[in-house]
Image (cartoon, rainbow, N blue to C red):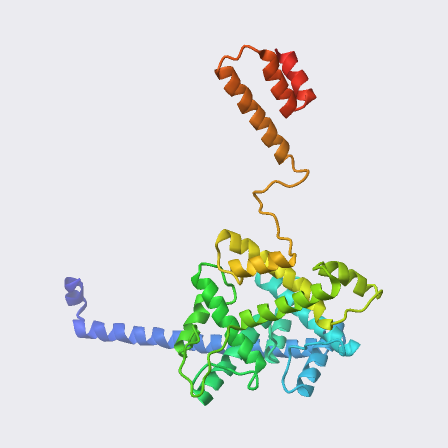
Length: 362
């Protein structure tokens, strides 16, 4: 190459300058192409925006509900959740149902099924602050409220007078954390959420120093004691704890409960029965030996363990047949001469049909 350079009469410096100039020209071409690409993308975005606005102006059911959502947001201080109650108007209930459907359609969209909602409609909903995941939104809202509470008071203990909702949020966090530490799966308390809570110094055990603070009984214990006493009062009134039976009578209007709180008892009984299964397995639960005994004495009928045989399941019959077979095998091993005695044992344990089959085999 050096010989070629020398033969051409060009110096190495001259060749280097030409190479630099070509590189510079190439960079200018690339920069020009990038500017053209950026301009094209901007034009595409403007065209897309024009298309979306034009499509949203069409008179169709989706656009009408979308405009109703925008109006609802203006009337409710930026709220787009559209929560309903029994007193809500039919129009609000219809809008709430539409909002729920959009969330379902969005889940289909992200999994590849894009026939239910178009991408530009998702963009339109995002522009108004649409909430796709209500549970995540609620958790984040409570978390932000907890941060504000800590900045104001310097601790995470929330009283009912301050906020019942935030107090329940804190209690549920600590309960979920205890269960997570015991090895139970807690979907609402992910590792990422724990990191966020640790970042603000949240105390999962609730042991903080507060001025004039009094030791408080665990809210779960308070609730259990209240409902247990309510069940005791129910039995004193009706003479039994068959709450579901009375619920049917109350539902048909044949009779009214002496206390409206009695209608909470079916859920309480269902819960303690589920907790009783955890108790038998040795897992963390709200029950202990004393509570189980108190509920048993009161008349609560517990669920049978899965390992226990049930009526009609055939387990008892199989157990009898197995015992009879073992009895016969033991007798044969001892060389018992009286075959009729063996047959009698089989006939007594298995039944005449099995005995006849045995005779046929003999």
